[in-house]
Image (cartoon, rainbow, N blue to C red; front, side):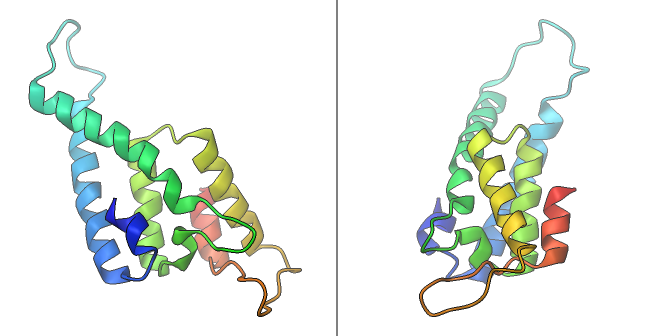
Length: 136
């Protein structure tokens, strides 16, 4: 997806893409109504929407992946766009274990007082309020 190839360099565009994906994910959430009568058939458009959202769920993992030398794409985004990303992750439900682990690592780093800026290491830029937002 574009968000991964942009690597946080285009925050406004990233925000627009995430907002659009949220609109799509909302339609999917509504179409997955548990009160649907049993035995009802799924239309081809509902199946395509479901496939798209399930694929997005997997693709979002790359936004949160960190390494020792490089911050995640999520950490490089402005806080407003970070909230959109977390919102999309929540709408898609059931994040993978890898995504949850990466996000928890990002949040825990924001509270670590030993994290100091140096030329050799990039530090996490997620704010404490953003970390609290993620953990809710």
